[in-house]
Image 1 (spheres, one colour):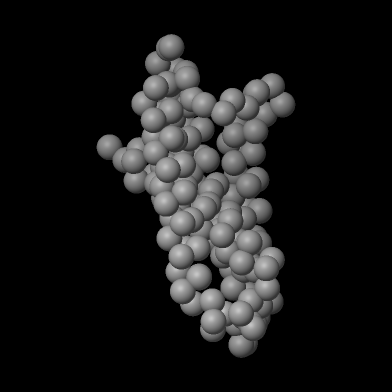
Image 2: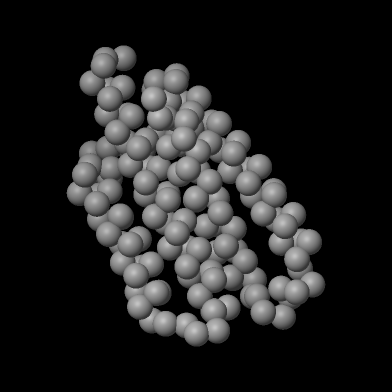
Length: 139
């Protein structure tokens, strides 16, 4: 594998991490938004704008191109290991967050819908994946 391919995969992994973080923050705002006592449209608009801005930045910077075929694994073994460990962190974080929600389920049962919890779990998974990749790939 050439040095250029490794650098392009590292760039793609970094973009995936930032995209995952922005998506996680957006999903977290969307999941918590109905529970806020004083909801404001600018908060929801800000979260949606952050997500769309990061998505378009990702598309413009070359994350999604028509010619690129998406592969589930990276060709570089080091990046593949980082990705695998990040998914392990996601599973552990999801288990801990589900345990925490289970312990708090008596107080949350009347206020929270199933779609809000599903969105919350997606937000947790996205945030943990992005943070894990950024934390592991720092030099």
